[in-house]
Image 1 (cartoon, rainbow, N blue to C red):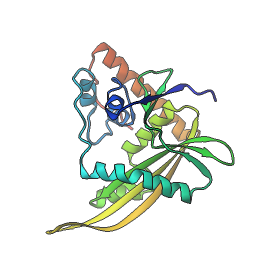
Image 2: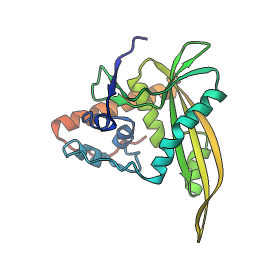
Image 3: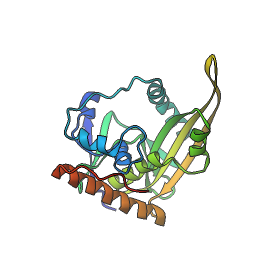
Amino acid sequence: MKKKYTREVYKTKEDWLNHGRVIGGSSASAIVGLNPWLTTLELFNSFFQERKPENSNTPSKAFGTAMEPLIRKQYRLTHPQYKVRDPKGYEMYRSTDFWWQTATVDGLLTETATKRKGIWECKTHDIRNAYDASEWETGSIPKNYLIQVLHYLLVLNDCSFVELTAWLNYYDFDDNGRSLRETKVKYYHIERYDREVEVALAWLQSAETDFMERVNMGVPPNGSIEF
């Protein structure tokens, strides 16, 4: 398949964070009302406001940033059927059909036996309660993260699958604070050409296109789209 995206590399993290008003993985989940930290309307308004620096100093984000290369190394050792490419500096991929669709991935994969291309995504998550646990224990990816990797498949059109590694920390809480009880590592696989995935990709492309048309016209969204 002929690829329909370009690779952009930025000199600094600040340049990478300020590459314009585009839709990335987190934005995609907000468009369809599945981002726990950003509503559809808040995302829409952000296109018309001065961009504020993100708070990247939270303990959870710091842990995730520190752990990502270690989890990638662990994945490489336990999944020899794939060749794993690490991100190179502050890089981003941009669709050539839809300039506003971008992807910043945690790694790229090549399946050794078939030469198929894939995407590797890493998530670290603190399990604080039964609801958190249920989101990951059902065998499927939580919807906000599923939308994120589906968006990556829209941008990286020559990738046939996604491998997501989830590093889950289970905590106990008492009057003295929290203590780590156990850690689980779970693996999830998504195939682009599964029928349900193909339908979801078409649905997401339509939702993102509609959202950007509203941004261009200055017309706020009516609400989230049911998934």
